[in-house]
Image (cartoon, rainbow, N blue to C red; front, side, top):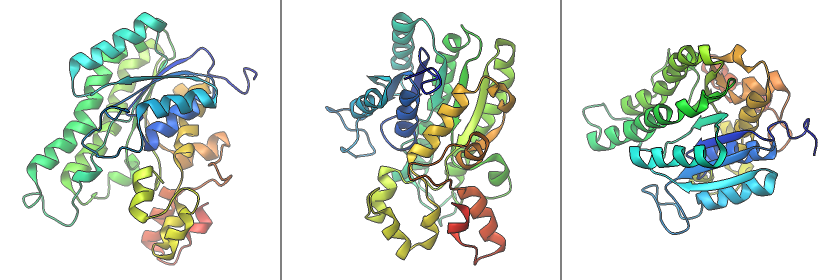
Length: 307
């Protein structure tokens, strides 16, 4: 491999929340570009998180990173535990002496989601847990990891969320706790971009489109191999994207010497695909958010026109 094909050789990345879904896709694609990637999460080969899935582990993610061409290092971490996060960052510092890419993808709150209920009808414990999982974890991780990230100029912070700033700012996500949880990372990227500027750092919020995560596929009763079968019941699923897509978006950002032009912005995988020219694993270039917005004014628009 050459520097052109593995442009992140020598870079050190932390993907917080890399057990499955977008986090796993991002970690693997950073590895494919040559990075050393620390992957964290609560589900290991010996322990299962509250999500309750035993089929994906951080060790498996690390193995996939290594198989893709990088070096994957699994570190079991609960990002709500400040001491565990401090130990994680301390380990990266001891072993590498630097951190170039920080991806905040911790979530794991899908099992708590309830739509169609008013806030006062919703479960308060579950709602507050969503805020812990999707906001507090990000704040703890950034607070602890950023001193290492700014040690060398050019660091990249990616806040992974659901929805762009343009979309979320004018639409309610039908659950107040979820709405707050997914808007907070956008604001975090906005604020941290200003704090990182003097250190030559870049902070962005990034959303995948309709993501074919392991949990999503299981919910539809399909696999990645036959995911299109789900469109028989839900035609709009035709615009769905694999985790490879958002992974390639982060890898492209990290490899771009001019990435600072994006700092503080809210981005989508489809938007960056058009900018950088990458595709999803099947060679398509889905634009889920473009499709979602278009469908609001034209119910007959075809998802196939946004691939």
